[in-house]
Amino acid sequence: MISTLPALFLRPAIRRLLPTAQGRKHVAGDYRASGGLSPFRKDDIMNRTASDEPLRAEAADRSIGPMGRYAWALVTAVAVAADQAGKAAAFDYVAEHGVIDVTPFLTIRTGMNPGIAFGLATQAQPVMLVAVAAAISLVLLILIWRSESHLQRIALGMILGGAFGNIVDRIRLGAVRDVIDLHWSGWHWPTFNLADAFITIGVLILLFVPDPADRNQHKNSTLSLGEQGSGGSRAQ
Image 1 (cartoon, rainbow, N blue to C red):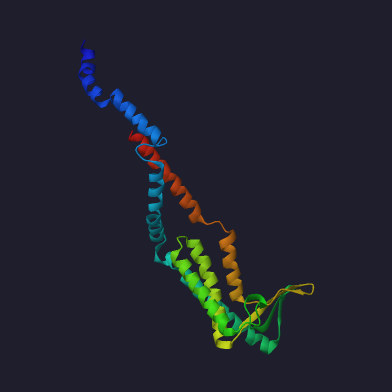
Image 2: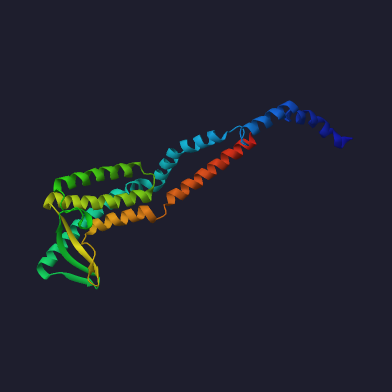
């Protein structure tokens, strides 16, 4: 008898917590109408996940700090400095000692390219090429500013540095200085410079190097969907 007393006192409280038959039908109907997620609907979850993206980007910027956020500017400056210093040193040395055979397939020689990278568009007007390069540089700056990926900003910074290096040549000299000659068995790749190399490497990174930010974004989105779905299940 004594052991049944707690149960007798608890039964009214338990009854108050349990939904009525009508309430259970109402909850089940909402659950089915929402596609299995109640009270959160699928479109609400997707909207909330999308609205969280700026917050995650801001958190990522805080996690890497100011140096990480603006590391692309340092990469751009290094690319311009290395390109200009390398061209000047190569032209000075070759003018005094002649071409440099670094390897059987790599030679340092000097040449002036009035066109764009790798000897293309040699008949174009220098002013037009400067204007096009400046427009491309502006687009790159916009992409860098809008990018949420540290790796993308670094790659775009390399491309921007290469573009700036060739713009400096074109403004100062009216043409771009080329110093790197790749060749094999009499075949020669068009002579290029470090600025072209930085541009090429940046493009290759964007195309082929997996971006950790993409994996983290996918992981965060999946976790967010799972948490909100489980929250909806608990709220039933």
